[in-house]
Image (cartoon, rainbow, N blue to C red; front, side):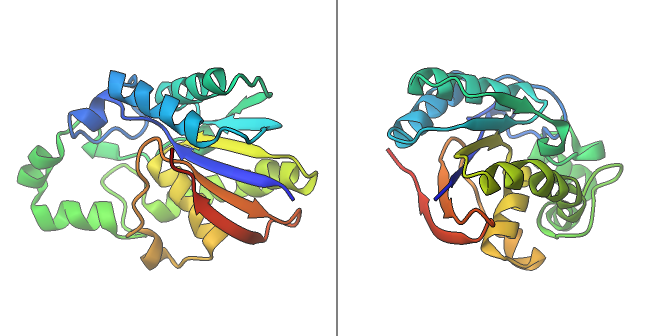
Length: 202
């Protein structure tokens, strides 16, 4: 039975600074690199046939550390379809400063509604519309072949995958919090139906 493991990248510099990151390419912090190593410890004993990540450095760096720690070298596929949600005009702003500039209620709507995008950015619904076709086309194809798949991506791209796997509504998925560097492992049928789910913790 194939396994699908999802990991949100380790803490990035802008996570640490409480800034909206989105498509901006920022590196991991030292804590983030440690989280990547901890994620690998949590996944010890699992063998991956293929790995997927986004076009952004923080996810790629997390994956590289994770695979090095595991001592595995599966093929790695990088695709912008797995990028973080684009935060538009909020990108680069400290979250507290954004609340002052646009109003706390408005920023909350942009962050926590499913279908309301920030100015010039993406809603979670729009993010899912690029993530899920990629999942069906690529990741699910590997699962159908019985391959164990590792995905190292971002909070909102992984949220979109969890929404599909756990059959969550848009309203339910916005409340879902995915911690940095903490794997979630699914046992799935080759058809992609979830048999069991576990948070893999060290």
